[in-house]
Length: 50
Image: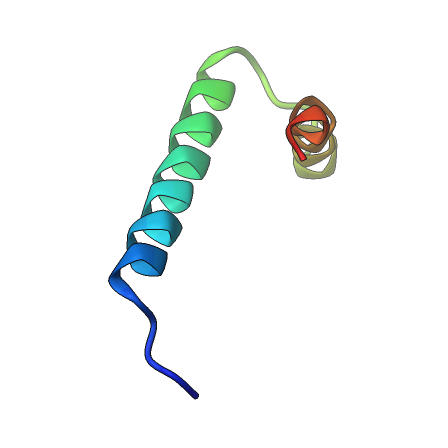
């Protein structure tokens, strides 16, 4: 395996931070029916970003 560059580490940490922030904001928005429904909803909202 090759070493991970600083740029790649920064990008990975930034993505992880964004994921955690989105999860926190989403959980504060209201009650969650089920974990599967919650994650499906997040995926549906994020799909246009791909």
